[in-house]
Each structure stands twice: as C-alpha cells, then as structure tokens.
Amino acid sequence: MDLESFSRRVLGILKRHFPSEGFQLGEEFGVLTCGELQFGLSNLLAQYQQSGFSDEELDETVRLTFSRMLEMVRTADNVLPGSWEEAKPRLRVQLCRSDIDALRKAITFPFASDVTSSVVVDSPHGYAYIRPEDAERWGQSVVDLIEVAKENLLAESLDCPMGVVEGPPKFIAIQSGDGYDAARVLLPEIRARLIEELSDETDDPSIEPAAIVGVPNRDFLIAWSAHLPADLQQQLAQTVADDSHRQSHPLSEQTFRITAESIWPIHP
Image (cartoon, rainbow, N blue to C red; front, top):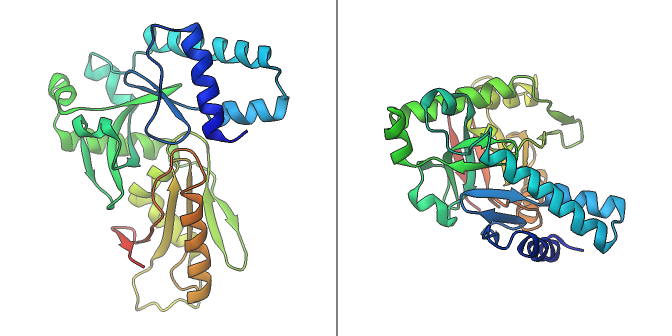
C-alpha cells in the first residue's frame, strides 16, 4: 500500500473514532492535520508493512496511537505555550513547502523559490507554526525568535550522526528521524561541518570551501563535494529531484551550494 492510500485509510479510521476532531488530509504528502497539529504517517506505515496488521489490528493501533497523541498535546504539552518560559526551549527552525496554507499567517524567512524557512514550536508528535501575534504575546522580536530557534536546533545537532558514504562519489547523509534533518542546513555550524567532512587535500586552497546540498524532504539531507566531476554532480542532483516526488514531507527538487556563511540555489 502506498503512502497516499494509507493516509486515506487512516483518515477514515480517525473520522470513525474521533468524528468531532476534524482530522483532514494535509497539504503535504503523507500528513494528516487536526487544527494546528500535523501528524506524519511514514512511521505508522512502516510499522503496518512490517507487522502485517489485520484490518482490526490496524484500526485499534490507529485509535490508540492518536488517542495518546491528542491527550499529550492537550494536557501537559500544549502546542502553543502561553508563556515565553515554556515556549523558549521548544522553538526550532523548520523548512517547509512555500505553498502550505498555514504559512500565510506564520513567521517565515526566505530560503528558495519552492521552500520557506519558518519557526515552529516542537512537541512529541507534531509542531505548530509561530505567528507574529505569538511573538508579541511572548514579548519577543521575530529576529530573537529565529535566533533562539537556531540555537535550540544546534544544541540538538552537535552529536547528530552523519552517515558518510566513501563512494565514489563520496557523500554525507543526515537522517536522524527527528523531523528537522533538512532544516539543519540553516545552521552555519552544520554547514561548516559538512564542508570539512567533504574536503580533500587536492582542493584548491584559493577557492572558498563549499559543498552541494539537497533537501528533497523534511527528514533527509544529503551533501557532496562541490569539486565532483559534472556527470557525478548531475547524477546526485537527479537523485534529489526524484526523491522530492517520492517521500512524505517533500521539499525541494533543487540543489544548493553552501559555504559556512551562505546558501545559494543552483539553477539548472
């Protein structure tokens, strides 16, 4: 069963068990929404495929899973905290498709033509986009929120494993599964680490160190040397483009040239 069919099946189960909650198919592939909450279904689909649930077992698994999620969100871990003290440690930067409806009211900053950077409040089973009125309620500027969100994500990224594939071609993949793998490209420290891992003693020291990055979906970041031959660059770029149409939480089919200080889209 593909992710789209599975999403519709889970939605049917949720509407039967939670008819007043207003669950809907999200604008992103493989995502369900409930008000401001977003729930990705990739992990649940993998569990279903591996375990071979019967119809009754799937029904009960979905009911229990979403019942726990809703209870957690509405009690001890509200998605949008009322105070700055509660909100501050939960802020993260995130990458998302520019055409998501929720972004029209959210705090955003530029990334690419098809992808937008945003600030979200994290929770165990989803996240909510931060709006200017939330910043005002907390007594914080938008710039301050972005900086805090980057600092929080960096603190969780310092020990994030990077999967190095020696190749050829050599590349690095980040796929921790925490929902913020692609967003790590927004962090100068992570960009510098990627470039250092991909550098080679044969690189021209007169050229600023750089790498090429792809963020085809929210949960995957891939990087390779900017000095690879053109045919290998094209091969990897095509893999990024293909992946952006296959996985849940799709982002960009573009690739980006990064330095420690900057990110630039590569136009075909």
